[in-house]
Image 1 (cartoon, rainbow over the protein chains, first blue to last red):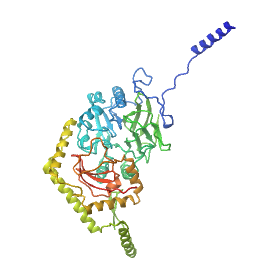
Image 2: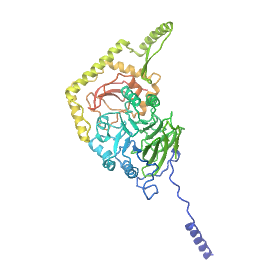
Image 3: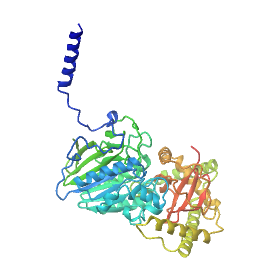
Image 4: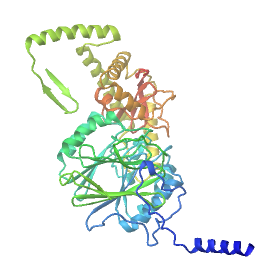
Length: 321
Length: 206
């Protein structure tokens, strides 16, 4: 009896040990319902790829490539982890500028705050010649940040800059006064760029519970965006990642979790296509011809969303991978 | 009749039947009178213009003093320390030049009442709900006592301003901005980061 039991036990162990194991499920793009990337510790895991980070961008010659961060300037470990991932991806993607969606420096704005919350975490990128173009958030200090050279604001609260056939319109959504609206009207009207990208802190569309969309700001900006054919809008403020369904043929991304995080922060509506609220993230964007490709990367290096959108003159549909 | 359309950013002309216009004008006069009685303050347009002009003149005088006493604003630099130092120097010069400044120097009682009336009208108007929602989303700053010439505290966020509110207040030069702290409307010098003046209880409780 004992020998028979021993035999069965050995057989059972052998069967379990030698049976082929099912492959681990591949990391998938995360929705609000399945926001379980498990990215919680800030270790530099590499998405299961020994050859380096997974790149979901075509990396075409002469394309415009940039990274996006929002609500980043906490100075804590999470911001540093995201910055390290950005550095890792920079080596592969070769983006040469970063757009900042506001709340670049949280809390105090003493000289060491700029060091701790910007210069140290992004040192490798700054040393590699990557330029940062900042928009102001409600936690930013306009009297200092617009004059801080590494933010490339040239002393202005709102400004434009061009890269290839892309023009960026950087707005101060904290203070959207008539003067700024007039300036935006004229700047958009005069732009000859193929791609017009606006970015600012407060989202016009968001399913976030904490702040949500700024409806009053939307009432002023949306008519201008529609009239002058703005293609893509990036915002922060809500401490999550969201890709919204296109509204009036304009694509909206919210990225407010490059330092801060508001876990489980979504209402369930039909306006959202993809979201991520279980850890920090940043975006990589590549614009080549008529397509804009995006890849959203979590703090642990996992890709949580990727896809492409067609220039609105070519198509009205977004093709998510 | 000329109407400023904020969405279109242009003045449009609308033609009315003269008879209807007369009736409309009568109704408007009676309604305006009633509104004035109910709200306690409804300056006639000419008087309103005078108040706004008076406010503009006071703002201009502040900027002249600022230019004469505090010099030109700093240029962009890589050094946050230089930025902090130059801002503090500018604020100190302005404080010295306006040592006797007090609440009400720019927002005189009449100007302050005009601002309260404008803000109340907007909050009670057709866009009131979305303006209040915007104020709520803007991480309101509460419990900060205000004083003319004080530095806006380091680390306290500046509450975002609803655009519709700004569209209906007198325009400011780029050196200055309106901000809300609690229920007060602040005139804030952006570069020097000081409170130039403020209107107490400008925002009625919701």
